[in-house]
Amino acid sequence: MNPKDTLNLLAKNTTIYQSFSGLTKKNQLKVTWEIFRSQVQIIFSKKFTWAMAVVLGYFITIYFTNYFEEIHERMELEDLLWFLQWPLCGLALYLNMQLISSEKENRTLEVLFTTAGSRYKVWLLRVGTLNLILLLVAFSLSCLTFFTFSDLPILTMAMNSFVPGFFTGAVTLYLSVKFRSGFAAAMVTILFLLLNIMFFSALQDTRYPLFFNYYDIPHNIDPGTWYLWMWQNRITIMVLAVLLQFFTLRGLQARERLLR
Image 1 (spheres, one colour):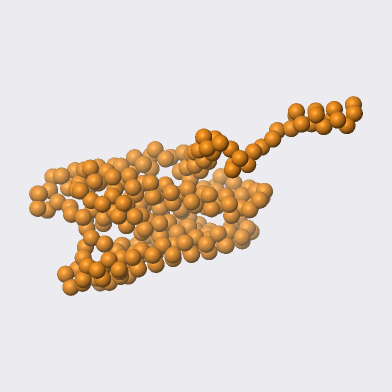
Image 2 (tube, helix red, strand yellow):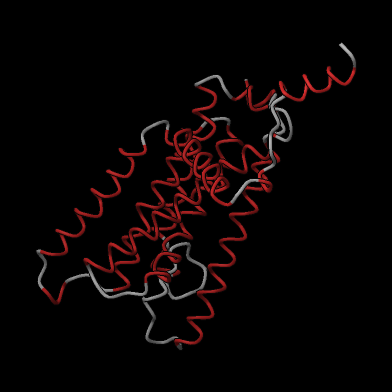
């Protein structure tokens, strides 16, 4: 066989993989969807339906509780924002505490350290998918609230309810790497949330609480000032959450410490 025939044979039997940018838009969407779907299955450990059922059950319970109240005692915007934050915080806490623990229990954590290329890409994809899920749940709950409770700005309500959940998840993930235990991280995060609730009344007229309620404007504060405080509060919390996730990724370098 001459060299030319050899090259032709190799060309026929070699599988050529296209880069993502070289795919058609339709195939790019298919690949993106498959990656997202697989990440969701990993994050929820195939319990996505159950998790969404719990969130929906919480929403339905609040709806009927509010429905049977007297008209003048039913929830207003500030109450709706308060109750929408909790399922997102709970979901963020549960998913982030499982992110490291489930890998250790399934004995797949070491595989991530030996993955070809950068392991940060794997974790960034997983953390990004998790937070995208939280954001989609926030928008879904906001839309449901619009059609069932009250006429409200869907985008503003969704983003204001998402921020505490995003921060709660970042704290939980950081502590789960720091303590090498998702359960310990969850306990400390729950304590942190309880302290925020305990001191909320003392801080509710300031720009500092985690559960800053944009719709509950104090009588002694100008609405323009309150609006500025809202942006300062939300931007600060988002930046702190991103920093916590950055230090979490840096903490994943300690392979032996995490595998113990």
